Image (cartoon, rainbow over all chains, first blue to last red; front, side):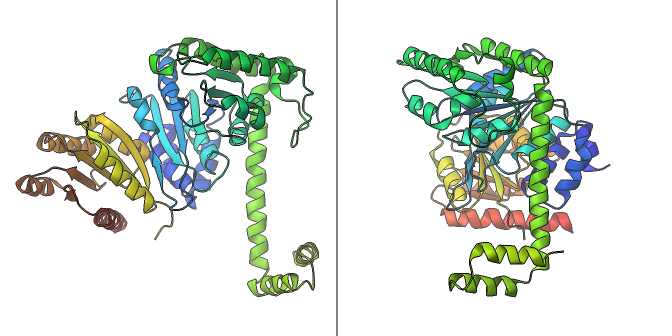
Length: 327
Length: 139
């Protein structure tokens, strides 16, 4: 039985193996993903992001338990940064998720970013697809979202939960980073700490201001309107104390409401199409460039580069001339 | 040889609360380029085996400073065997008397590291065990 087939029958060992192959970019990974594709498209993909230390893993722990209490199966991808110096990583998110142990309907996998800069590893989207095909109802991706990094996670999931904590200077980050724009659900965690109410009030003001701003005018905005703004999803602003499991029921309700909302308005299909397009484009880009490199000898490239540095030609004309030489 | 990072798991089974050693090792392994899944304290043998399975790590290290190694390590080994993970090299770190070290090695533990073992030695041992396991698997 192929690895992909085993995964669809609930073989967790095969699932773990496949995730490794995909992370490592092994030759077999595309075959596995291709075979699994028909089995996917059912899971609700959720992103949980926020600055380091706001309580993402703790919140994931109680949120996953809450989902489990409703009989929902959960796959978790916990992404942590790789060291840019050693390429190693400490993947410590499991520490906070000990309550999820021993439940075969929860699967937790830690991933290092391995040089990717957007908060996700290159393989995270594919890993989420594997968990989807393995039959998990919800797949939650957790990663550090500082500044612009949160935007990448939002592009890869259907519901993005942005977590903030009081008094950590996040309010300034919120304006700078576009964090508010990517949030489908905004949560102030550690709501028992001083400053929580100010943070909440501040965010409420920011949310209201965001509504009156022009839609879709940003850099890189797609031709389609953003789902939330298009049909009127009101971003809830919640408070939680994750370490006490306070406010989690409300969060779960909002999560399920957003999922229902997307399903009703065709938002899931739109986001799926966007994701798939991004995957196809990325593959094409890599393949075409690899094919290009195979056709152009290194010597030719070196000669051109020398000429460019010597200012005999410019990089733009050089690229053009290389393109002309391709079949 | 693969250029992808080695993935290992470090866990503290039982009730032992002294985790500084485990964290020092975790950081050293990270600085040598490994991805270290660190599960923290109070792990049961079942939890450790489950984590090894889900994370598909190439080696697992347990840190035991409480003296409970004779009870805990065999249970960890048993859980790994039950999950069909007996091929994953298992390391034990902590305060282990020499007689007990011999017993652990006989049980199949790859190596036992006492306090003060240079991290370079640990890193080399982990790499060697993983390479050995890989060769064994492909033969």
